[in-house]
Structure formats: structure tokens, C-alpha cells
View (cartoon, rainbow, N blue to C red):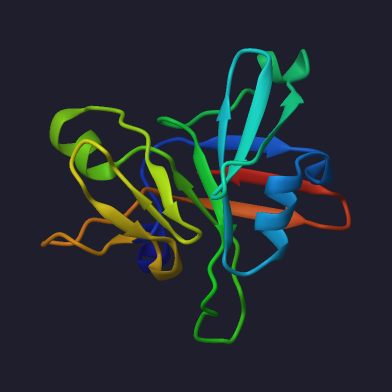
Length: 164
């Protein structure tokens, strides 16, 4: 269990989206290998943006403003890598939108931006993170890794939960 725990960030995280189909970018990312979306939020709305810059919003409910409010450093990156795991499965992944290099070194919460469908980068430090390779930085040594969170998705119930 400690090996499994080691791949997930130590930061608290929470996000619950229902219905997932109300956010086309999230629905696509959750159901299609090689697709990801960023999730950010205001006090009243969730914003879902894909790598092509298309976005949609969902209003947050009054209940979410209290007990079910999202928790993260900057936002979330949610999607399905284009490369299957060792069992041949395409496993949905969730990461924090914050650059871990900037956050851990300087406590700066710089949001990452898409530079391709399965790559994000930081405009401050220049790190590029590969979403197909568990969020590992591809252009720095020693390699840093995106903050990863646990995620569950039930297409039948149309609900997605990120939780650490």
C-alpha cells in the first residue's frame, strides 16, 4: 500500500462533478484515450477547458459552497492517457493544475497550460509534463512529476470524484 500511496500527492484534493455529461470537455476526457481537460472554478461556476481551448461551464450548487466545495492547489487536469497501463487498460488520471516544480521550490502556484493534447507546460520555469507518462517532466533532471490525485468515475451514475 505504501507504493500505491507514494504515487499520489500528499495535498488534500476534492472535486465532485455530476452530471459529467453536462461538461462536454470532461465527458470526452473521461471516456477517450489521449484526451484531457483542465478544471478550474470560481465561487459560482466550474470551468472545463480542453487542449484545443474549447470550454464549458457548470453552475456550482449551494450545497457545494459548503460541504462539497472543491479543494486543490490551483485546479485539476483530468483525462485518459493515450497509452494503456501494463494490464492493457486506459486508466483515468487526475493531477493538480499547479506546476510542482514552482510550488515545491518557491511556493508559487503557477497554473500549467496545454502545449498539446497530452502535454502541459509551465510558463515560469519551462518544465514540460507528459500526461501519457504519469505526469513526469520530460525536459529537466531530476525529473519532477505532477501532483496526482485519486479519481473515480461511474458512467452509469454519471458522476466523477477526485479525492485525496
